[in-house]
Amino acid sequence: MTNAWVYILVIAAVTFLVRAFPFVLVRGTITNPTLRAFLAYVPYATLAAMAFPDMMLATGTLWSGVMGFLAAAAVAWTGGGLFGVAALASGVVLIMEVLL
Amino acid sequence: MGRRHSFILGARDALPVSLGYLSVSFTLGLAARQAGMSTLQASVMSLITNTSAGQFAGIASFGAQSPLMLTALAQAFVNLRYVLMSLSLTQRFVPGEPLGLKLLAAFDVTDELFALAMKREAPLDPFYYYGMMAATIPCWALGTLLGASLGNLLPQPVIYAVNVALYAMFIAVVAPPARQNGRILKLAALSMGLSGLMRALPVVGGIAPGLRVILIALPLSFLFARRYPLSEETP
Image (cartoon, rainbow over all chains, first blue to last red; front, side, top):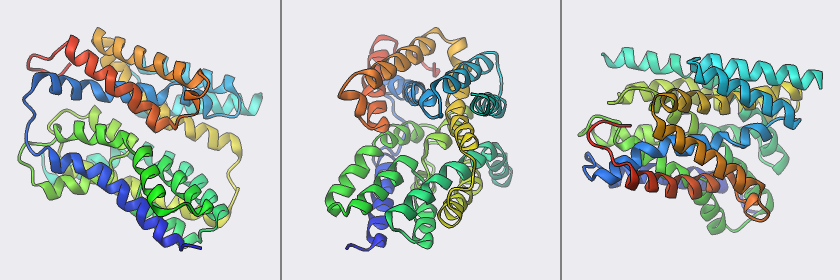
């Protein structure tokens, strides 16, 4: 049986390399307009795809996840801050999970 | 703004994330113990690498005693979305910032810290990033330690509620710019729609979430960049 420490080292090393190599590769400011636009769009595309539908599947019942998602979207849209949005979504899910 | 001030600001802004990390890493500790890791091993793992999906995959690999090459490959795939995030972050720091300072931040490019960094106006002070790291890494390790040593203590509804908090933060980052900019709204809506579609389809629905995110974000961002190039300002 291979020691767990070996696996831990592999996990940590590969993860760091994946995260670090763009910084080694790209040292200066990117001037290509298409590439700059691409990088400006990437955060929104990734964060949106990460939140949906996974947020609704992260709870015990689908309905509590759906309600949490809708609450978060509504408050975020009307300008709720990071903490407010997170706290409200959590509260909605907690109540739904206990009630259902 | 001074470095000290940036650091404190980063730590303060990341506090909600720290709370979320405490609970998510709790389940990580549980899983690690079940796969046969010691409490010390689980905690050290969380101290030197913060990647929930990656660590779960790694724990599973260890449990199954997968070959190390395969473990490394799976790890790279699960974490591939960080390439996109790091690439975006390279343009956020002051040009000419020493590589060492940036690599220290690269150590902890997580979904949540990336989201917070994107909420900051560029240029991003590396010390702001270090502040976020200082607030979140100990919580990630502590949660793992508690999960590994105390077992199933948190009631399940609480775990669900905190799981959702981390996702809610992604929405909180995307919504305000989407409201102001029609292109971003379109991009976010398309991204969510495709993500939901892929998840619902047979076969592709089973793809790891990290990989699904890349398969969607990469072509979609590229398409938008071709269609709506930037002049000077960011969108």
